[in-house]
Image (cartoon, rainbow, N blue to C red):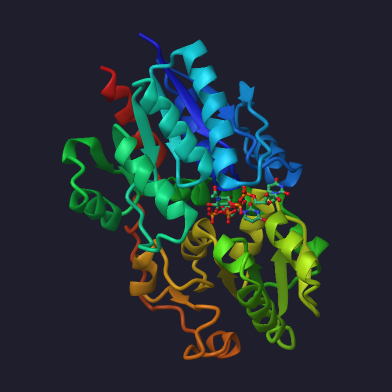
Length: 363
Ligand code: UD1
Ligand code: UDP
């Protein structure tokens, strides 16, 4: 029997996660995958570059949803995904993470009683102001099989009453991606030469979270803190379009920060691996810092990846909290922990574990 899986993706981090599991599916004779791209991210450097570079199968369907309001965006995706599912009637629907595309995919499948598989289940920030927090909770509770990337996530799902037989601790598919593409990035990326960077002489930064970007005070504090580092380091800031739009609107002065367009994954990984440290509000980038042995400053009041803070690889820098040390102090004084907990995110074989669970579900 062939298992037909419809994968719903739409945002940058989902393309990277899907690259690993799609590869694993294509090595499994009884699984056939159809990718639905919601269109949530659409610029070439936010979408097409990942499909090309990471050899992700071309989406069989692109819904091209372009709405900006969350309700309208999620509703348009829901309508488009439902039409697709009604026409194709897949064996199961696979969703990733916590974006509006994730929630739309889970809702559409649940209405049609199609089994839902959720990759990156059980993460919580406990900050219900974040759109992602609501997306995660709803998707987890709608899902039939939940793949938890960490032991904390596994425990969280149990605390929320989700039966243990629906939850599997599988490790983090982003760890698979870091291992697989890390060596490819080393040989293929020439981004350091393009930007004339010496190893360890620069800090890599990313900012895109709604709670930072949509709050003018927070955004200008972040930019000012990054600017304060430019006397000692090059600050490389691949700018998410959302952040770019807001910086232009507020006419914020970026000073000597090196602003570049969003990068393809291989260039991004290459910059991560050779940086002095990483400053970010991204979920994925926090973990990649750890995978590549880099210290991370997280521009948020909380993180879902608490184990990294507990182990000393990550520190939070809440942008408007006057009690925190300045970013400059943190950068001047950080220390990489002497010990490394190598098993936090599995062994780098998460994609094949997830594929086996999906296969077994139908056997
Ligand atoms: C979304 C996810 C967030 C994830 C992030 C990954 C939700 C609620 N948020 O946030 O969890 O961390 O993706 O990057 O799903 N834009 C473009 N071109 C693009 C994409 C976006 O110009 O290719 C601009 C548009 O003005 C758009 C805005 O960025 O309205 C925000 O995009 P959106 O996908 O709604 O949210 P993100 O901030 O990217
Ligand atoms: N990323 C990338 N190019 C960039 C910025 C990020 O390839 O210019 C990758 C990054 O390495 C990570 C993923 O995108 O794998 C994280 O996506 P993002 O920060 O947009 O979303 P989040 O993980 O916070 O949901």
